Image (tube, rainbow, N blue to C red; front, side, top):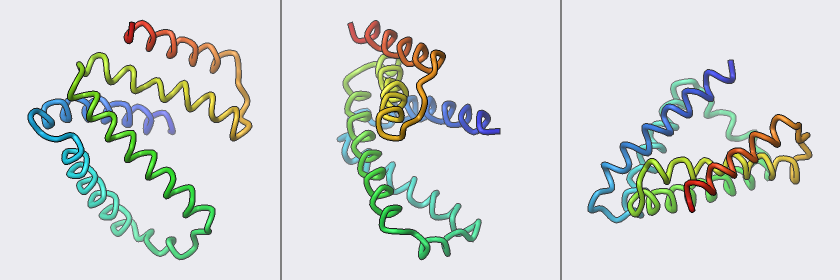
Amino acid sequence: MWWIYALLSALFAALTAIFAKIGIKGVDTDLATAIRTVVILLIAWAIVLYKGTNHGISGLSKLNWTFLVLSGCATGLSWIFYFKALQLGKVSQVAPVDKLSVAIAIILSVVFLGEPLTLKTGMGALLIISGTLVLIF
């Protein structure tokens, strides 16, 4: 079941790139990111309130808060740089290079989370890195 959500994530990430490229024409990318963030904030809280999971907020530990805030900061910076790259480059180049994050996440998961690096995962990461280098140069 996880792969269905992953495929939906990929679909909506692709749509994000197309919609953003059209939407940022002649717009400051930081302003565009701020508008996008407000929309995401409203959608995320609407889902939480609809599902009734907002009561779980009181059970979050300091560790949860720390890493959720750090994740939010990383997400925000990622979006800011992504929108700037989209404004300056082609979607067909920016979006695939942005997916280098997959290979970086694999490496970081091995280093910081102790996840095993299988031959299949390692080769996949190397192919992503190779493809990114082809697109950049």
